[in-house]
Image (cartoon, rainbow over the protein chains, first blue to last red):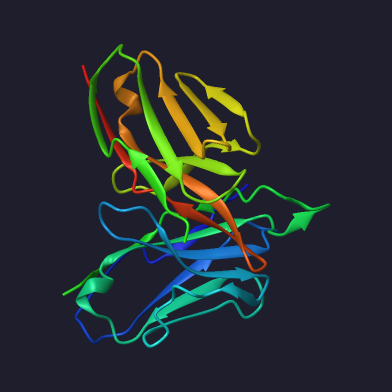
Amino acid sequence: EAGVAQSPRYKIIEKRQSVAFWCNPISGHATLYWYQQILGQGPKLLIQFQNNGVVDDSQLPKDRFSAERLKGVDSTLKIQPAKLEDSAVYLCASSWRIGRTSGRAVSNEQFFGPGTRLTVL
Amino acid sequence: ELKVEQNPLFLSMQEGKNYTIYCNYSTTSDRLYWYRQDPGKSLESLFVLLSNGAVKQEGRLMASLDTKARLSTLHITAAVHDLSATYFCAVDLVVTGAQKLVFGQGTRLTINP
């Protein structure tokens, strides 16, 4: 089974430029996540999709970050314009589904892609 | 707001020794995950703990979950150099229909020969 694919793996840009990242989840996974991982910290959720709908974007800086998953499969995350503090690894993850079955939450085990390391100069 | 705290944050140990990493969280949850991250790499799923009292073992690693104490532990037995990595716990949180993971800060484990 192919894993989560991301591209590019590395990107260096200057502040105020724009950048876009792409993610293709594991086949059949309904839920897709974008995380930001700053060096030395745990991943922080930016946005979560179920199929092509946004479930949670409460921690997405919407003045500069945007994301879409138009056909419910692959997704893009864009930053425009970038700031120095956006330097981080951007991780994409996917899981089978979220929600509850008979009142009990199902496992939300997430599978992560290799990430894109962004450096903003 | 859910807080997930790991300790220690840094751990240097000798091969052959045993040690435990602790993960405390602040809100009720009965789902917890452990991940491993090697330098420059992505996160690899280690354990999925889905109920109070759950215990999972894989090789020299064993994870447990006590939902009443809001505590999970990752125990390392007879450590070997290959286990050097950063370990994250992540707690499953349900918020208004969304189910998401909140990660701890990570424990950077270095195992010396």
